[in-house]
Length: 169
Image 1 (tube, rainbow, N blue to C red):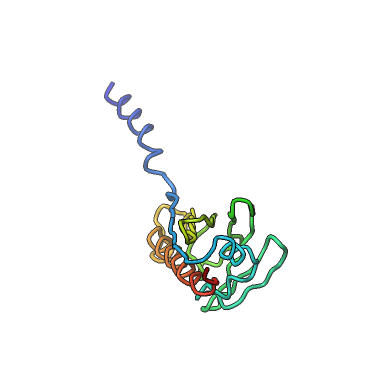
Image 2: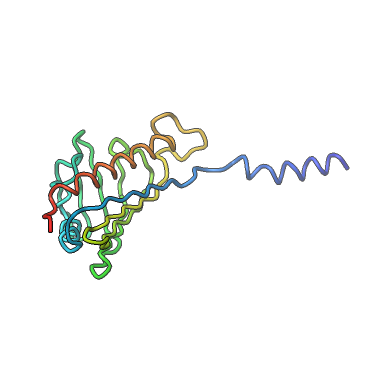
């Protein structure tokens, strides 16, 4: 009888031991002293990101829904737009063919949204992603902490950079 209980416990516990990575999330925002339409115009222009993101030094618009960003370190980020909603001032995207030197993630989806906030605009950037190495024991640099730190830094730099080129009211 003890052996049966031991087997049952092992069968129940085994799935808990063999788990994969947990999804990570970045959710950041910034208030910009400019009209929402002006901020939206800048965000919705496919390659304008090179003008306001301090880490992006180049951009190639592949199609209206695909672009390749070139970062300061020479690595590239391929973005594919899933949805553009001008009436909601919202863009949803995902990364394709991810260069882990750019961001140590295996997959990433994101959404940028502009809303009015009093006399200013609020830009919210939410990203969900998995670390670069999805095995149970990822090496340093490809783990959850590295993914979280890299995506947080990328988004924060973007939001801070976005404040500069937007025409004030």
